[in-house]
Amino acid sequence: MKILMVCLGNICRSPLAEGIMKAKAKKYNLDIEVDSAGTAAYHVGELPDPRSMEIAARYGIDISDQRARKFRAEDFDRFDKIYAMDGYNFSDIAALSRNGKDLEKLQMILDTTHPGQNKSVPDPYYGGKDGFNHVFKLLDDACEVIAKNISNHK
Ligand code: 4NP
Image 1 (cartoon, rainbow, N blue to C red):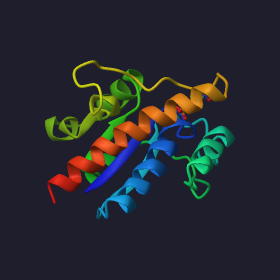
Image 2: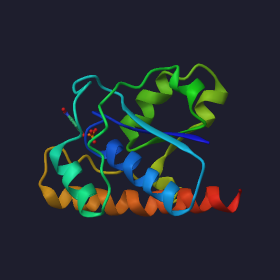
Image 3: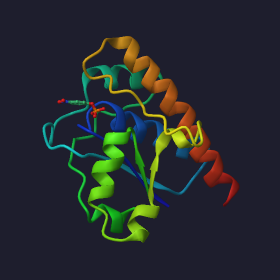
Image 4: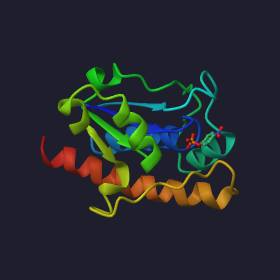
């Protein structure tokens, strides 16, 4: 199972999702690969946002080895599941899909915890630290559901 987490810049939300999902893989002893990417290139090569690194570290998760990269159509070949953080990410990823099989891999990450609600993980970039706390909680809950589902189907 190979999972890709995608947001806009790949510096705030998807690096957290990647770090949290990797921590869940350890917790549940899952044999999975996790990566993240952004639909925009503004921050390619950069470290995660310091606020994301700080909140992750508070929960014992080190995401400082991550570097931002841009999502590309070949990611549909490399990954089994692609989780979009918000509706803009979803549309931008969908626009790069080449067929129905690609599109089937794509899901809003909060569909896991809020099925059918088309709920987005809010972009915390221009806000304060509270936004990052909120994002962490949303993603921790979502990754817990994803991990349990994988674990139940082992
Ligand atoms: P992310 O947050 O998509 O969660 O990484 C953002 C990062 C950078 C920008 C916007 C959102 N930006 O406009 O540079």
